[in-house]
Length: 212
Image (cartoon, rainbow, N blue to C red; front, side):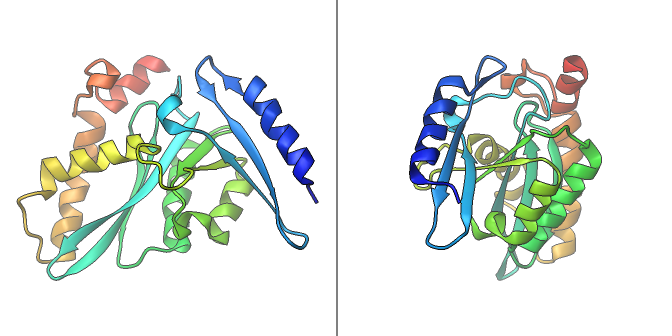
């Protein structure tokens, strides 16, 4: 059991010492519940935080896309430093099992060192046991927005804005196959060819190659 006093001390300690690679500010918060369950969530403020190399911080989110008369859910994991899409999935439902599958794919492809931070909003799909268990087993620290604060997952918001502006808005998808094929074309284009002003007008892949 973590006491409130100990949790407060931990927060203050991390506020003083939680600077990583010159610009990565981390705040660790301990929460004591009634009973013997302790929830420890690593939180950082994304609007003030910037990874300095790939595989320091990943971000994830879900957006809605229309197919015919219904919604489908696009789950994406992105490297915050390079903006590279690491994994994605289009699904009929949003839950922690689907999110776990996307996270699994990203972890298999990148094999990051322990200490990676995975930052998302507080959606239930990111708080479920399948996701938290996978993160813990992989040595990944979970970070979440405070809730109600826009811009704390700005890198994901930017990706979804680009995606929708480039290939979604003004188009009507009648089948899930049609939308999935469009996404399969777009993600390689985004990773390998689309230039980003924040990356010095390089693509995410070119940026990572130069950063290696």
